[in-house]
Image 1 (cartoon, rainbow, N blue to C red):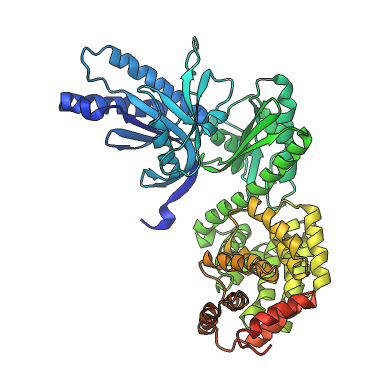
Image 2: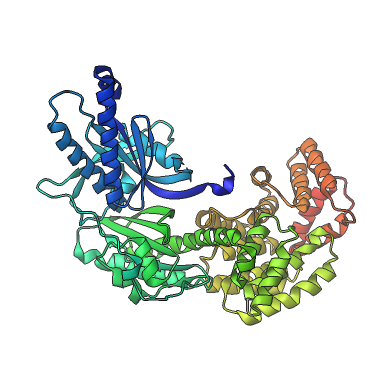
Length: 590
């Protein structure tokens, strides 16, 4: 199967198998087979009733997928009650009992076959369960609302085969004297929401009120405060359409299905989460879900001490607000990439162009896509600024720097005129000016971008690049650590920033390590790799990298001119001299 046909996502996974199936078969093969299949059939129907999908049967095991832990846990316990009742009426020993494990993790789905770490973890947890029992991952227990009548007995931290870190496991049970909750009714599209509500062109998102799981109504202000602050922070991203607080809090104390929320509000994505406070500790979980499919795109857990509750609130909100937009950009680019060319809007052209650019900025299809975006929508500021960046970068492909500047500057000015308060555009403008050695303008627009939104991944990457060439490598390294934490899925396009930063900070081994993970580095960066090896005392590797650079050079490429521009980018003479020293060790006359 082609890679594009695979689906990767975060999901709640249920894994179940039959206890002692070999012994059952030895007693009566035909009868055992019939009863095992009947048990799996009953379980599949129960899974469906609770909104799950029974993905496949594997011999004496079943794998299922759910959107929410609050559906998976009651489905598992409901089946165990049903199966116990069926077995109690049998007058022989061929009584299939199942053990069930439930996890939250990344999976890969292809042709109804589901694999991945989430499936393996669910299987390992299931092996901890008693016959007829259910064991769940700690994260799963934390995302089940406190209003549901379940109890979770800690089994401690378990070292599971295939996992380097211990996993917290819990045995799930129905609380004594309580009844299993009925499956929640799935609203039909005809009954939900206002008619004709158009989904915005750009990524749209609602933050549902975080659930207070502390068991203390007085802590409601804290979970509500987390929610309100996330809405405020995400609203700073001009690339997002964020549902306002009043509409978000319409869903407070409810457990709506994300598909219904998406339909009612006309949005693409949902952020949901919970807050559990115990003593002087708080645990906050958050997850990002695609509304149409219910696919989990991202999830994180934050454990904090509550020395200052408002500091904790600010810290967690900033981490969530910095992580979510990067995930949305990847999802939006993927949607645009799959659309038919004739149906592309200006925004689709922009996203498809960025998707190609971050893979290979020399791709000849990139500039026409951005040009098409501004042709369709002359107010598309981001397309103008990406064109400016590409023209500024063209000096690395042999375009004379004066010609690159003549092309880049008017485009950057147009973008800034159209959208001066967009932090992403300010940051790309800063990088563009730095590439053209306009240091004062680069600093000015970098500082403006940070003041507008320091949580924007593009702003963080810009800070790394600009600060490095302004000669403040220590501050650049600090921003690089922040960016790596908040933007772990960033593209290869940001690797060059890290290579240059590590080189200029004399951290040659780190710079070389970045190259090892780079699938298709631009040709000019191979020269930087060669200089890095030379400075690190590895002349043979330096020669090999330089030879590779020479083989990939396009006809007419002026290496000396490119190096001169590179040296001019350095504000401090000692930084320029450091690069010159590396090139001299390669035998270049610079």
